[in-house]
Length: 173
Image (tube, rainbow, N blue to C red; front, side, top):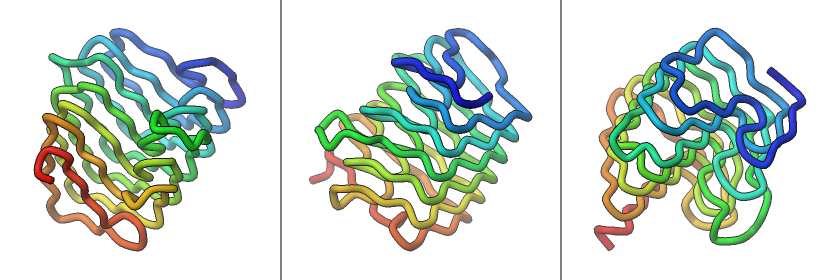
């Protein structure tokens, strides 16, 4: 799935898809994947070179307050959120309200955004297992995870380095 342009969900815009798997999603404008509405499993997907003007260039998770997202065996690389405003956040992944986000056996590298190069979220419980977060960057100081109000994280058996190691939780500070 490539070379598409949309305001939201340039690669895939889904409201109710259970599984997205075994596909490459690249060079789209308006997020590689925008998912809303119900639980979704993203497995064996390579998401790269996508652009979004505000947030979630790789994966944008929106309005899923009672649902979760599982990202397993994925490669999320070189996605860029372009604008330098406060809306720009989470180039690799952005979530506004998924109840649970589980990332396992995945590689998240070379993503760039204004606020958080890897993941920016609110009201979400994040679990990262057996994954690598490397060389992600942002215009702000949060090159890794930016956890907003109501969010928590558990990270285990993962490598996080060179720009992927900052974790900010706005509730604690």
